[in-house]
Image (cartoon, rainbow, N blue to C red; front, side):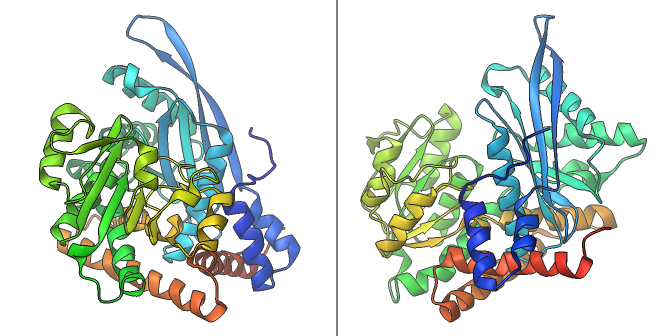
Length: 418
């Protein structure tokens, strides 16, 4: 088992602060700080060489007061129990801020998929799910894709769990391929949610300024970053900087986004695209722009580079891309930050839609999915904005006041057994 001490990251500090502002009893805040349950498993996998290698996996349920645990699974060499615990807490608040009936979870395996074959990744996934089966289920814990996990990985999870219980269980995982119960619109859901939040904030931060005059930089060109770039391009925004793990590009006159998507798809990276200036990720974060979207891993904007951020609006498409210290610096400089628990909640909203569709065996059109996603995201942003105006606080604090208040109320009315 993982240590019982809660993470001291930004989610924990904001929970304590929100609890104080809401006037919650200290013992209730202490309950909300601690994960409900944590599981560490060993995963022996037969490699293509014929030898066995043992990997370590984690799954954390942070809170289930408002519904079953929900959260992604990531495969990455830098996965740590502390990171998984922090991300599980973020999922609790993310689900609460958009008011869907889930609690927060997260999971991960310490591995490097880039040096593993498809067969090795499949065997790793299936053994990991087998080890987690004691806590998984459509009414207990519903995983989803995250860093380095795909629709195919979700299909293996579905099949492994279904074989374990003896019948197909479409609601056990979301982010699946359409052929096995996935939802239309799921692949672009996080990006569409980010756009909805960004669009709502734009009128406040850049009143009267047309989209074509707003310069946007996106760090991260995976599923979220690339789809967001496409959506922003279609809506008339000027994309001036893009980057991925290999490097980045910049063009102050505007990047040809369709060409960038083709270039990245053909070569596996955005770096080196002809006709653009080559930059690194730090140059992207500190470069001139109006809107900055961190859509890569966490901890990208720190106290070392926060003072160099030139954007007026930062939209957290990634989970926890801004450290506690950096957040304070940005706030003191008047930079508006749309927090991750609001900005990137589109993925879990459509995961909820997929779960509902799977349980009912009734599937929606993509137009229905996108329309309902936009309705929820815009409503959540307006709720957070109203709290920020009333309490005279920033959007992150307001989002936590909304989310923590909802989870605290659910905990209070349910009571503590026994």
